[in-house]
Structure formats: C-alpha cells, structure tokens
Length: 406
Ligand SMILES: [Zn+2]
Image: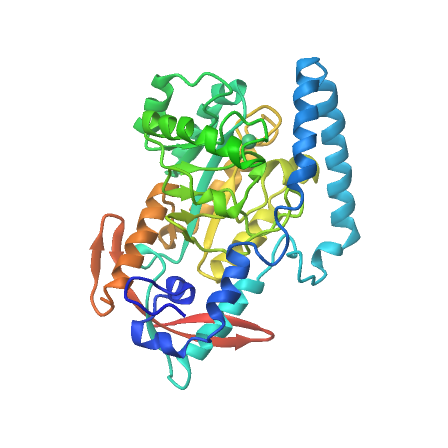
C-alpha cells in the first residue's frame, strides 16, 4: 500500500478521505481495484492478433475497391451477432472474465465495501467531494469523426449542443482526411475541444510496438499543432500500458463495459482515474451505432436507465456519438440525440458538463489537494470550489450506496 505523501492510493483517489484514514483501507484494495482499472482480470490483448489480420485484409479490400461491399457484409454480421448476444441473456449472467452489460456495478460496489472498512465504527467521514461546487454528477460528450463526410457534419452536433448550453470534444483523425486549420480554430472558438482520434484509423496503431513508436512523434506533432490534449483510440483498440505513453493529458480509449467492441471487456469505472501520467475517462454509455444501428432501438430507455444509475452513484456519464453518415447526426437519429440532451438539461444545476480536458485537469487538481491533505477548507479552483462533504455507506437491499449527510 503506497503511503508516501506523493502517492495516493486508488481508494483515496476515488473517495478523497483524509490521509490518516488510509491505514484503515483493506490491504488488498490497491491490487483489487487495479485489476479492473488496468483491465487485468481478463486477457484484454488476446483479440489483437486476429484483429491485425482482419485490418490487413480490410486494407487490401480497400485497394481492390471492394470496401463498400465488405463493409455492408461486416455490419450485417455485427448486427446479427449483437442482437443474438442480447437475446441470449448471457450478458446479464455473472462471469468473472466478462462484465455484464449494459450495467455492471461490480467495481462501484467493491469500492463502497472498501470505503465501509475505512469508515469503520465512525458514524460518517468527511471526503473531498468528487466534483467542483458540490455538483452531483457529470456529463461528458465526445465525438469521434471517422471521415471527411463526418467532418462536414460536425456543425449539426455543435448546434444542437449549443442549444442546451453543452460543450463536447471532437476527436479528429490526423492522417486520414484533410483537417482545415480554420475548422480547428472554429471548434475551439465556439468553446468545444479538439482531441486526437488515432493516427490514420487503419486499426494498426496498437498492433505492434515498433509501429506504435514510429507513429508517436507524428501524433505528438499534430497534438501541438492542434493544441489537442486528449486521445481516443479508433475502435477502442488498446494496450493499457501503451496508452500511458501518449503525448496527451487525457485518454478515453477505455469503456466501463462493452461486449460488442472488437476488443470486448471494460474497466467498469464510472469515474475518471489516473493512468500513469494521464487521466483515463472511460466511455460509460453504450455507443450510438450499437444502440440505434446494431440493436435498432428507437427510444432512449437504454441511455436513460443507465444514466440514472450513474447519477445514483454520483458518477460520470461519458458518451461517444459520431457525426458521420450512418450514425447519430443522421436525420432519423438527430432528434433522439437532442431529446437526450434536453432530458439531461432538465437535471439543472446538479449536473456538471465539463469538456474532457477540464475534467482531467480538475481530477489532477483534486489529487493535488489530497496530496497536500488540505481537507478542512474550501478551495477555489479554475473549475469551481472544491468542497468537502460528510458521507456514509448504507445498505439498500443487496446493494451498498453512498449517502451524503446534510
Ligand atoms: Zn473511429
């Protein structure tokens, strides 16, 4: 258990209790939490070998101009597979090597169980609250822009978000389509963020180390040119250890649970957390193409019911929605996106909508406050005031719950 003033344990990172309470945390807490947060409970890298072959074949088909045909076949297969998986009911069965879907609260419950040990015989404890100004929960909106046609349609998403006073990040691919400098300026000028979505979206960035190392300097150069401080890997392909080497401040290539992605699994967290020098911001709602294209939903119940659960846990809703043809900015789905934003907006003042970079910097700032063990004051930060709150863990049926005392 790291106890030097420089390092903060995982459990304390999440709950922000005072340093002297650290000795009450279960000894195995660090290891158990990292098992999920670093996705070490299953062989997350196992699918990469067959995916490497898949992406090479895809490249060859692209050269042979057979891509459109194979894309249709590929999406039909994915649709069939996704619907079959949902119908089978398998995704709700407990399995130590695979998270449940769409909700798996194993990690959140484990954290509360550990916090209960820290609280011990005390009635309640003070914690440095998760979010500034005592906000209850967080909404982070992100957009991966897959193609030049997607780039032409980012205004559709910007306009609808501006209508509700929300902001988001647009994650652009540096070496696939041309990104006009003026557009980067416009995105930022309107209060949105620009992030980096891989290298050229060929699926090969995380396949072999030499290639990854070869591409890193170019990614670093683009990050500087765009003043981009965040990253999402294409198709959420990932090696957790390599993400830490990216020249950015936040990464969002992980998700809490998703059995439908090419590399299934999940980190299970509904909160940001440190990943080496970065802050990891996992995607916590199912993605647009899965919900509305593969599974064919035409209402918001999946997103809303999960968002309610995350709200109960004071967590972070992080959504990835694409502007490209075939996704959420299409005429048939855009009204649903707007309805979701309107629904979130109705939560009013209790909801915080930071851009990913603001959230990552807030999280680091909060960690600094914890390092200084300055719990018993209010701290003004660029994002709002860091407050402390008195909490305890209560049992509701089979579940533990964090209760905030007045
Ligand atoms: Zn992508």
